Length: 229
Ligand code: C5P
Image (tube, rainbow, N blue to C red; front, top):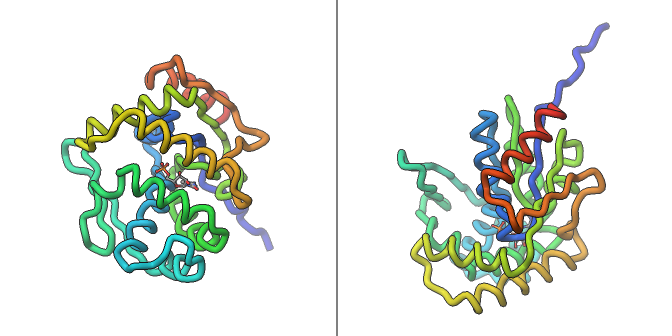
């Protein structure tokens, strides 16, 4: 009997440290291609918010993994393009993007059982016609068969400066020095953890965005996309 081959939905992964520009670039890439978009960092952030709400410690691996299996998240955009995130029906948009939540997310993200619990959730985003997945381990662990893997880098000072600007635009006031310290601490934890550390996949295309604007970075990636897909 002839079996129809299973055609996998194509995925483009965009990994890199915070402030490398990967969030904006991958969102725009998804819009350009008309593909779905996965902000995997937001899932770790949501889990950290839910843990705080439920009084679960950031190192209670079993409780956090169980929590990941039962939380319900909804991502929506207002007509003006502003993101709104609901966690079990509660609007957590503002808390979600704070540096404090980013730090808590990076602590829960270091726990292997949490990463396993989030795998299926992330893979459910792979739907036709395609997916752009933004994170730290999209190309290495979650979608190792991705059609194209991008790893976006930028100098640490530049990344901290961008994060600080982004936070200010969102009305979150914090000093540049505090953001530099937080970006460094988070990077260190993400790069050195035992499970799914932040490293480029062997077949990733590495782009340094330090001296490139978003448009130029996106154009570079689109060149690669058209060569591959
Ligand atoms: O990208 P974002 O800053 O929202 O991610 C928050 C934290 O979640 C990261 O510092 C990282 O520790 C964790 N994360 C991860 N793997 C991903 C995405 C995010 O470990 N794929």
